[in-house]
Length: 66
Length: 468
Image (tube, rainbow over all chains, first blue to last red; front, side, top):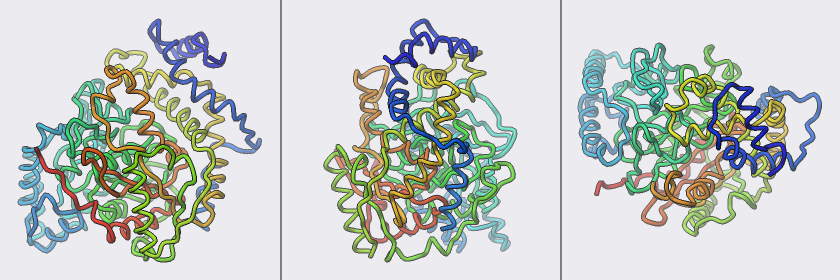
């Protein structure tokens, strides 16, 4: 299991969000999210610096007007 | 006249308008059918018989006085129990919102009612729209009208089941990760997830502000287009619709001849059950006959796009639910609570990277499809599995089965594309198969035109399940 989805990190994130989870919760969550986190991290996507979430709307509307 | 309950939305609205049948007769016919099917399907959360009959009588009186409200005058509809109607219950398939009365009305519902439709009741759904199968520990599982031991798909489980069984002509669902398209596929109906930003989500229960969309399930692609023509367009209460183009009814009627469809070379065509693969081949042949150009397309890595979608959905859902996760965690069903808690695992940087990448992922998708007007893909690799084998508290490999049936969904939500599901055949145990026509941003009308053309050449959408 990669470090970035370790049960310890999940327990810390849940505590920071002030959401109570059971004793076995961090272990279960780590198992559930590992494939997603690992897949996304493995790609190491280089996103241009100027991109922000709303850049999506620009692409979406540009194609609509093609 | 054919059985009233089996008429599609377009024909039913026309028959009422021409006074070949009254709204009261339609309402009574649907209520009789609901009485018959509800014990088997559990599609309805509630039927508001008294109010519906009053509305039907009022619609008939108005029509007799020459005062038709709009294209859906006198048509009873029932929507997923997450669409608010002022003064009515909207329990969202949950214990937490049990008894909750909506203080406002959803814009989509307001527009449908301004067009003359009225509320027959509300249909069941997965708890807080966060589950792909139709299981619900609070309200009971909704069952598939083609085989009641099979799942409906979720989260618009009641919408799929009720439209499939002909209990209502159409229903609103919502699609954040496939929740319109999966029930449409599993229940043998048409379902339309519009372009993100095309239909207002105001005063509906939210799940993910980036990915949520509002759309119809109905008997035909044309019925879906009728609903979208009414509900699409800018709404000051939902700023994401500010730039939404006006619905172009003329574009829906464009001929399919000369349009082009891309067929993915991989991912969507990998590991399909033979019946689903055959439905794809038959659909390609039908489109070719209609004069549609079929080309192969090499889409970017869809597993990666799915992963990004998953991060965005999980974090936003956990954010909406954080107050209840803190204060009422035991009031969630275990599976939904687990899914919500998964969203706690991602860091802010991971979430925002997934959001920032969205523009580039869409750009890459559009580059890959070139000039294609749509991409044709299965909704799922298989027909509906059984309720028992997808019960995560029961069967050992339930999670794997669920992953298998839902893997073609999330990329479309992440990319914000329109997608129409059309029935395209039948597979094992006589269960329906749907295919999705995935369009370009804000090109919902072209997708509708392709769906309408396909249904003019095929009859899968006309098949009706029988109650055993």
